[in-house]
Structures are given as structure tokens and as C-alpha cells.
Image (cartoon, rainbow, N blue to C red; front, side, top):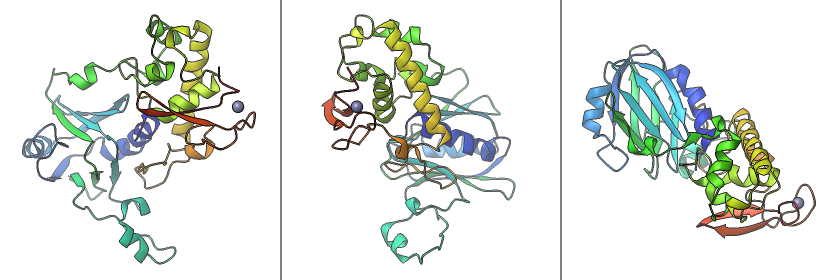
Length: 291
Ligand SMILES: [Zn+2]
């Protein structure tokens, strides 16, 4: 599932393609739970508009349109936002992939999973939003309306202060990992980076949130920002379906300390990394390094 770094990587690469260009063609698939705004209305509203800015809050992208409205984009579990110039084997079916000769690159052609296609008034690349499982979301927000999903979000994890995390953890008996994943506390943190940050801060994911000290909260938040920034630098993680908007895979997964490394040795102390289930999510940690 794309987390904050993957969404930020997407934002940085998509922004130059989107900002300042006039939308001249809008194609959608049929109405489905992917569309929080009916596709017919979306097509009418986007035509002729241009995007002034592309912001991110947590895992949401927010495009500001020149008529004061906003287009909300969420990648969900398997959403891919990219341009018509990319080449990536991750965008091809297994059959197409098998048919490629070594070294051959095949350009993506919009398919049944390409729910939104934007073409522009110039001859430049188109923008595609593809999502095989349709847990992604698109919504058009009228001027002065607030999306309830955005309203519920806490401060973006990269902008958060340690004192905020410490205050949020007071009186909370839930595991600290569960608190980190709570989007109303810190927006954008998902399973991978929560596990990584807890390892770097030497805190076990199961520890009750209220037992994490102020100093440890400082260490945890600074570790969290460090792994998020490092992942953005390396293009995100391509553990699941994430493909960078330029078709490149991210490389953060090569640097993981604990996430999905269970039964492998801790890179610090050689103890075997454990995997447990915590709040219906997997958690990975080193029993020796994390207390
Ligand atoms: Zn260890």
C-alpha cells in the first residue's frame, strides 16, 4: 500500500506534468466505488480547467484547480498515477510481460483499470490514474467544502512535532505502533515506516503508548522523519504494486531494517527478526534491540 513517501514521490514527479496545463480531454471508466464524484460530473467539471498547485496531506493528493475547486486523489491499495511516457513491466499483464524480448520496452496502453485519463491542450504526455482493485478514490471538492476524510486527518507526519506525539500518547494504552498508524494522530504513516522507525528508536511495537517517554517520542519522531525522507530520496518502496510515476521502482525496500525481514538476522545484533500480528496488521521487530 502506498504510504507517505510513495505519495510524495508521486506528487513530485506528477506536479510538473500537471501544473499549468489546460485539460482538453477527460476519459473515465463507468461509475464505481472508485468515484466519489460521479464520472459524468467529473468529466464536465475538469474539461478546460488547469491545475495551479498539487499538495499532499498524509496519503492524499490535492490538486487546486483554476476555478477554486479541488481534485482529491487517493491511491488506496494499488493505485498508480503516472504519465503516458512511462515504461514499466509492473504495468503490463503477465502475458504481455512474457512476450517481451530481453531489453524490449513496451509502452503502457490505457486498459479497463485506467479509471481516469487526462489529456491536455498541448502535445505533451497524458496523465493516467490506474487502480486494479479500485480502493483508490477521486473526488471533486467544491469551493469551501471540506472532505470528511481530510478533516479527520492529523498533522502530516513530516510536519509533526515530537511534543504532539507525546501529548497524543498520554493516557493511551494501545500499543505505540497502533498509535503511529492512527491517521488522526499522524497522517501518512503506514506499516513499513512505523516498523522501521520503532526499530531505529529502539522501542518495541507492542509497548503501551503511555509508557513511551518524552525523550523516546523525540527519538521516535526523528527516526520516523528520517526513514520517510530517506524513502522519498530513494523513490519509495516497491514491495507491492507501487510504481513510480516515471515507471521506475523505488528502492527503499533494499534498506529495510525489520519490515518483512522476519526469520532473517537483525542487521545490528544478529537476533532473528520476529513477526507478530498487532491490531490486525503485521509488526516486525528485534527482541534484543527494541524494548
Ligand atoms: Zn537486533
